Image 1 (cartoon, rainbow, N blue to C red):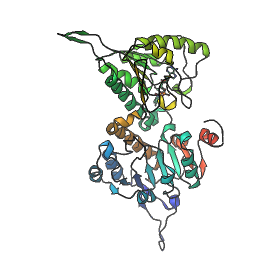
Image 2: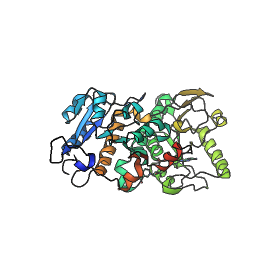
Image 3: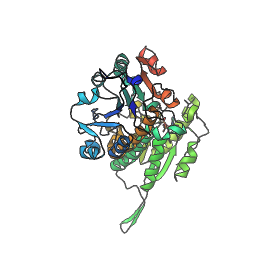
Length: 403
Ligand code: NAD
């Protein structure tokens, strides 16, 4: 690929007195993530090296990678420029790569036409979205990248869910008073712990694989029957119910009240015998389904642990408190959020590769920034452009409707 350039017609910049269009490398900037508890960074030195080799100019805010264990000197060695002034960094950006959504204060520093790429969490960031509209910023929301084969390398939801599933098991094991593997020792034989995974999507499958590696007996349940094959292929037992709730696009549909009652009974029995329960059940755009009411928690063994990955969207357990670890009926219930940030080195590495891949959609075969976003992945993930909210549900939500 030739050097990515800003062509005259794209950003309209021609220095005074110049007769020929200015050809400048595209400036990609990476600010330090400032959200509380966020340890990740949107790019890593390995990716910077590839971007600079492709002709981008990469500028990184001082200390942006420190909490993910990518110090400034590694970014410099990879060809990036370190900037200590955040306002100057943002002002000079053509493309901004982020993990968390931009704040209003950051948006106010950006020049018109700047492209911002990252998780946008639109329903919780309406003010920043409105401001991006006002300032004619273009924003791409990685959570809307379609789950099509061509977009797999850009699927940041999956890469971060993988990290979350891993961390959930490690945290569960850390809080559990038992060994996970079976042990045969001179001091007696220890029975393996039972780990139950509710929701066998990307995070759930990673949790199953991790719990298996730690030697636990692993059971899993998902409303999508298709998940059963994947669960069994990881060596875990799939809890079967005579329901098939696979909806459009591989996601789950909502269950009928009768189906919910049957599911509840089977899940409750499995929860009661588990030492660690990892819950990951989600329905996109809706509140998380309630799978563990407090009456079920009361039937669990003392010392059992629930790690609720759905804490952010209301929790799969009734007693989950988002952002907290609580103990009820002798059961530890972990509702901590943003688990991928607890393995920031690798979650940043995976995220950075997702972004590197996404960037290839924004330049044409000559290396110029595309002026029209016609690729289906860009169409699906564009949130704000040219003063308008392009994502229908967010637009409806902004005008008072439901997301
Ligand atoms: P998700 O985070 O939306 O939900 C997690 C899991 O919870 C899902 O498997 C869902 O079926 C399950 N669930 C919902 N309600 C439940 C309930 N009441 N009880 C038990 N489980 C319940 O899902 P995800 O991890 O983002 O993945 C969703 C699907 O998309 C999966 O089939 C996954 O394999 C697929 N996927 C495809 C691609 C691709 O083709 N590129 C990429 C990623 C994921």
